[in-house]
Amino acid sequence: MILIILIVCFISIGVGAFLYLRRKKSAAAASVAAPKKTSEIELLRQQISDMKENDQSTLEAMRALRESIEKSKPKPKAEPVPVKKEATYADIDTTKGHPRGYGSHHVPYGGTWHTVAPGKAQTPEACWEHAKRNKLSNWGWRSHDKSCWSYMDSYLWSGGGGVSPHNHIGGCTEPGVKLEDGCLDLNNGDVVVGHKGGLAGGYNNFAGQEKMTFKKCRYLAAKKGIRVFGYRTNRQPDSNWTNTCFAPNNPDNLGGFIGSATDHAHMMACTNKDKKMRDDCR
Image 1 (tube, helix red, strand yellow):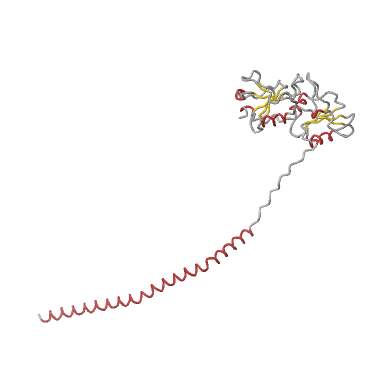
Image 2 (cartoon, one colour):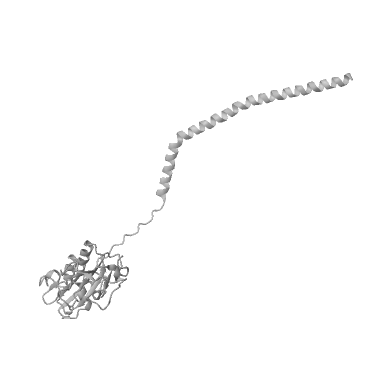
């Protein structure tokens, strides 16, 4: 019985000693680890501080590196700027002779049959150059006296030349347009040959009977806020009305008019070149 008691006491003492030593060891370990953890935090703080101090220099270094890379790249070859070819006399449409009459008098530009005086145009090219400088749509040359003229209405040429072919030459001023089209671009859709007869609402003569070019007619129509206008050509048989302007009172009634190819006495057009007659110039 005594022996059992001694054994139990011995075990109790041993367990207590073991637990004591274990607590002591844990405390010691904790006291050592704490300074280490603190040191790691301080080190991290120092590294962050250093990074902040070096941030500007890092950015500058990266910028310098980027510039160096860009400079080392092969530069693309610059595309050549297209140079617009200046038109020559060979580029324009010309014909021998002058237009025939159509029942009305031919009307000269500026009221004169001599835009260049006799003896001053040794070649037809001189008449073309004069027309180009003065922004005239057409020109004519007389070989017998070396002089030039221009028609008020270039559409007069649409019937061809043929009259006195040995003494006259005529042509358009701008390249890309033809005499048979009256030196106008009839492919764009803003200008059509003819007018719509019997139009509901009729037409008005917004410039009276003043004779002028097609270009001036368009200009006056724009000033008056007219979106569709008409022009009586020099192929109009009544001399009182050749080279005059008109306009539909209600252009919405045109119904997509795209021209009448046999009516050479009239033309209709949009005031805005970017609009189309098929859309009533809207």
